[in-house]
Length: 450
Image (tube, rainbow, N blue to C red; front, side, top):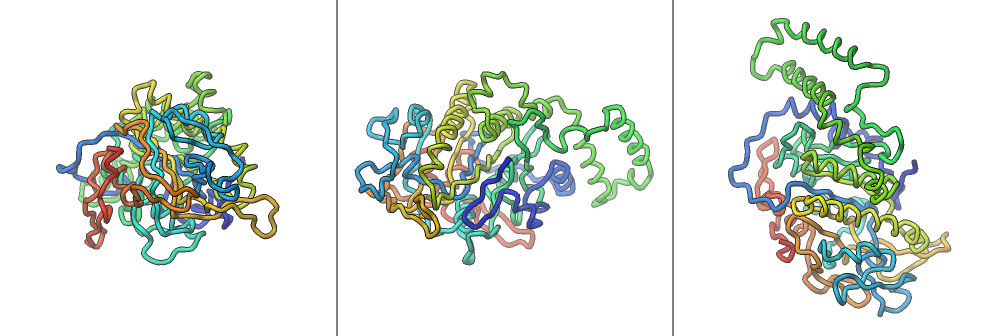
């Protein structure tokens, strides 16, 4: 299976290659261990009433073009409007690009934001701003993996722990560069589900027994461990004994491996062929299907990392192949959630770090044109959790240069997600050294989506 890269050659494996996996994202055993060692959080008595229980965040890494997706400019000069035609949607007067056929038909089931803008025009900074609602504190380069503030997924895991024993925050097949917990700690890092769920032998590591280890042998080893645990030093309930916390970690891992509910959530082969076909028999489509199964299992936040949207060159050739399948899969997810009665309690969001430049250009050394980074305009799909379908928030100018109507910020976007999930975006969190930090500096949600 190939890996998408952005203009800096950063692959979806770079987080682990840089040695950040332990703090930013890892396997289930790690997630359970740090959760066991951490002190339990007290429930927030002042929590908001939630409109949604879960969120599926489709992260389009690299910066998807708004022109060739949700905000075409058919009246602009050719060097701005590009090669694709505009098509009508289910909402009169609203146009999408020609390859967004299924989502155009489905617009009354979700909302669209066309007017978010910011001033972070490189991958590292833009990713951080949209993933956290906090601009980077210092200048950040395109290839940087930065974490100055907890990510959306980590905050949701902190504020809304799951009720069924599974980790609260998943990311597939890797973690976005700013998708980590920062000062919240490794307990709230995502459980990363690697691999390709479209492959016949797909398994989630740490949730199935290692190859060659039968259930009987596993139980024998567990019994031996229990006998060792009967030693007085383990029975001593002295506060802060790390051995006891580690023992609880092993118990959680043991319980998960034996949990029928956990096994069912990850066993995508149980889905009828018709359903799997509807999502698309490709890695992206099957990850969306697995995300739906995790929602059904009670997981509050799932990121589906979808790389390869940094089209400086060959924009039209690449997207003419990619967009039809992407459109098909995302529409299938929304339809499936709606058919199952889950859309009203599940947010589905698709976005990247920014949009693309209005004017098409051909880079030196390339023969096929593309668009460069552009943070003055972008489009965001926003569905579920009581979001009014068919709503289009804001607008860009005739050539797609900038958001000019109902101009919004990343803070407004992130505050909307938190509010929908029953989390107060104005809440103050405290770092381990006691420093107060606003969850979002401007906690104003987008009222049209509430």
